[in-house]
Length: 393
Ligand code: AMP
Image (cartoon, rainbow, N blue to C red; front, top):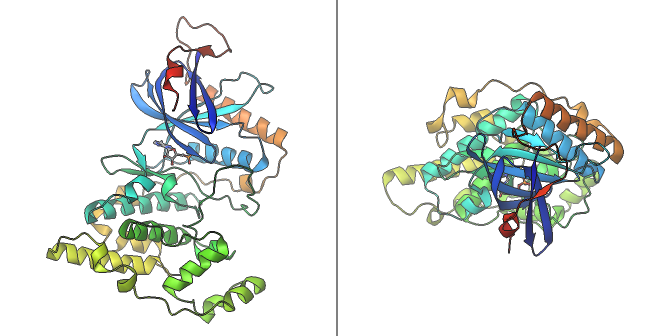
C-alpha cells in the first residue's frame, strides 16, 4: 500500500498528512480541537472529500475518549444532516508504531461561522435552521443529546445544505481539562449545562436559538469570558429566571445565582428589532420577521421546562415550510452504547482500543485503502514531490 506525505506549514508549525495515494490535491480547510482538516480529491470514487487527522488521539484520556466516541458514532449514525464517514485509516501498521487516525468525510464548503457573517434572507435562514433541527432530532433518536452545538461544528455547502460535524459532550464530560492551545467555545451552551443541572433533549434548542439570534444580530449573543460572565450576559438580556427555576439548582449554585442583581430583561422586540431583519418591506418579509422573532422567543428561554421542544420547533410556522417526513423522521440510528462514555482507561488501553477500531474498520471495508496493482507493500510513507508545495503560508 502506498502512502503519500503532504506537509503543511503555518505560523503554529508543521502538520504532516500521510494518506493513501488515492487521495490527491490536499488543501487545508480548517483546524479544530483535534487537529487539521484538509480537502482532497479521491481518485477512486472521483469525488471531493474532507480528511481529518487525529494526531495521537490517545495522547491523553480526554482526547482518546473523544476520538473513540466520535469514530464509533460516525459509524453508527446515517442522516443527511450529520456528517458521514467515507473511510478511515492509519498509515502505521502495528500497535507499537500506531500514532494517527485519519477520518475521510464528505466535503462541505464552509462552516457556519463564515455563513453567519452573511446577510441571509428568510428562506436560507429558515432552511438552515430546519436542517439543524432534523440532524439534532436524528441524534436524539439514537439517544445522543449533543449539548455543545456551535457554528464551528456545523458545515454547509453553497447549495445551502447543512451537516452537523460532531457529537457533542459525552455524558460524563465533567472533567474535560485539556492542555491544548485551542480555546473551547462555550457561548452556545444552555443554562442547564452552565449551571450543572439535569438536562433533556431541548438543551440543544438553546444552542439553535443562540445560532439563530447570531444570524439576525450579526454578533454572538452571550459572549461570556467564563461561565459566570456568560450567565450575566444571559440574565441581563433575558431577565432573572423564576424562583421555580432557582429551586431546581444545586445549593451552592443556587446561592450564587440568587445573589446576582435582578434583571427584568428586554422584550424580543427590543433584543431583535425590525432593523435587524431583511430590509425589504414586503408583507411577506414582515410576516417572516415576526415569525422568526416568535420562534426565537420560544427557543431562548432560560427555563428548559418552558422552552420549545425539537418536535414543536419543527412544526413552527417559520420552519415547517420545509417539513419533509423522510427527513424529520428518518429511521433511527442503532442505539448508542453509553457505557463508552463511562469507561475509564489508561492512555495505553485507549491506544489499543482505538487501534482495534481502525483495524476493524479497515478490514470490514476491505480495500478502503486498497493497494493499487503495482503498489509495493511498503509501510514507509513515500514523499510525494510537489505535495510540499501545498504548504500553508
Ligand atoms: P473539527 O476538527 O471537526 O472541529 O473541524 C475543524 C474545521 O474544519 C471546521 O470548523 C470546518 O471549518 C472544517 N471542516 C471540518 N470538516 C469538514 C468537512 N467535512 N468539510 C468541510 N470543512 C470541514
